[in-house]
Image (cartoon, one colour):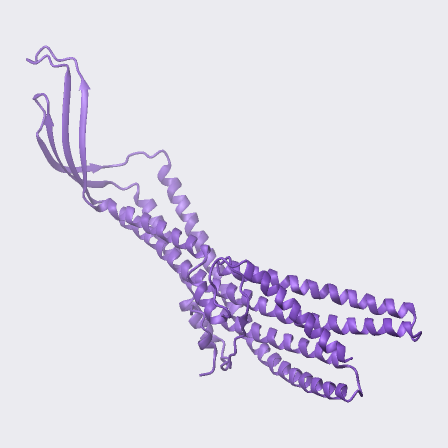
Length: 434
């Protein structure tokens, strides 16, 4: 039985060494080693392409807003024309080429609010993408939390399966020795070997899961280096809010996704106003100066005046634009109402989950204390050669630690989700009792 502990330690050490060698071979970018959860969250806010994509959409919306604003600015155009002409018999010059060059200054001075409404709609779109970027950044931090905890769970599972494999192997090996002495049959040996092979398979799957979860964590951190050692977070969680309605009021006011939809709904109303006013007349101020190759009667050297453009018939284009804008407004109103319902439900579920996890964490701590004491007793009995269930005790202790860690991971994730739903940034310090 003493060989079991040595065998278990050797196998565990070998497995961890192989895993570390594999992880180290993939390094191409620097990640802290060991890596803490706080460090992973700091990295998450700067290095992922999903955030870059949303920021590019925000920049595009900002450019469209700038283009809409420019419609009310002065415009300066250089004009030129070249004609081949047949001179009139009344003209003294028989030059068959006519050149003209000019400069024109134009500015729209009144359009019944069309361009203002269009610019407001573009501005709303830019604000929406800015809020979407903030929301995506915090949601990405939750993905980092999940990936970080998946690695830690995989490591704990590997330890548990490694303990189980070592125990199963020792029992299988002992059965083979007893068969040589004629104490057990071949059936009993095969039964022990069958159990060992099943546990051995679980152990190798757990080792593969270590690699897989590290790949996922590296991906959410936008790194080609696989993280090696992680530092478990240790938090003393603060008291869960007793009332739900204050949480809901804060979420309604500050949730970036909900705010973005409100902004977009206002922008859709501005777009509808712009579509309706596209049929209104527009008034432009214009100043032009010209230079000609031929001086002819009726040609002005400069002009200054007011131009009025009155649409008479659009062929249904205005009606179609108005109908499209109305449908757009109804769409975003529905999105806002649906998002409000989903937000309240998600917030309520998270609030209730925190309370359930608090109770489960307390029970898990009792179970872990029990398993630690039971392990100490089994180890003492093993030393006295009274009882030989040390292997099972170690497996059960590892399983209790894995369960307690999973509850802690779920609690941190629930607190982070509660923060994001209320429009707050994910903060480990804000989860902790001060």
